[in-house]
Image (tube, rainbow, N blue to C red):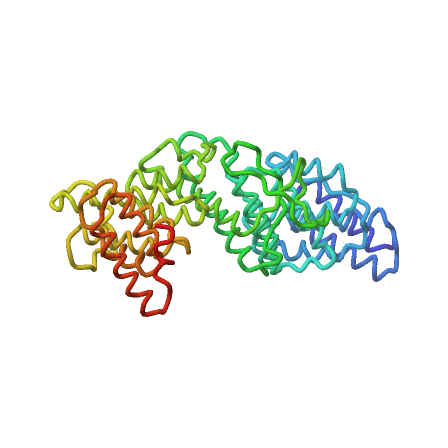
Length: 453
């Protein structure tokens, strides 16, 4: 020690370390490192220990910017850091596993810094650091913690990893992270009184995933994730229609599936329906309860939430024939009993219908017309279902004009054929006359109108 200021400071650091005087250790370790540089003396073993103790003390003090600076400046790469006991208590498994697979001091110190900063609520500051040359390691550590963590616990490493990807502008990886959290929540068993909060968190996760993936070019708006298990209510696993490089796969075991933007939106729609329907059907609140698209649409229709039912059916790709039939039944019922007060909440609570004049029956038919305009296709399949259901329930009653006018203009053959099938001969004759008149004016052959009737 004689003649060396650096060795003296190093000795002081050793004495202070035994007393856990972090502020003093950080100060004298820095002085020792500077002194060794000034003296042009190299003692690798002592200097490694000084850099390590300086970093650890700065992290323990919450001087995270100083700890980051020390981490990036340390020239030694082959030692490891012992984590503080308080942190080992909470993340023992993660940290021990990491220390077993890494002998790189910067990597291990980085793991320590991540743990300390995230545990103390300083994740935002952590992500503000550049970590030049260490970004792959930072991402690897965060991804490891996310994969092995409970989304209900704090800190939430899924959210931290998501924020990291967003900060980098990597929206595709951000989407994959939030989608993985949504899937993980769906696999959890809710503790008493926790089901609704889990359902809410799952909705937030899937919505964030959908929004992030929507920012990606359509050609690349997909992620490869671990395949969902059969029978979990998420639908069949999509075949891999892309050539996917190995690095694109999420680190997981088992088969992979490609998840596109529409897939994420479908899962979000089901999660949101679960949260909404839980007020009337408590059993669906549990995220582990299998809920498929057909069930979502049927449950919304059962409680007369037809706007939600139609929106869910469109997003989930569910056939709307039964749904249009149900709404038609409601409208016919109101037409036959105009003074009825039951089963009218679906009209009375509709903001759009509240601005219209007329009876409840007329408003109901108008709402049905709006849904047909939004959801019917070029074959007019749903309009024909509404027509037939109306005639089934009210064979001699007046058919809504909006329906017959549309079909007469776009599919007169089907309209006339249906009227003949239900013995509505007068209506069939009237529509035939109109079709002949239209065909004459357009110089078409009238026979073409009736060839299939």
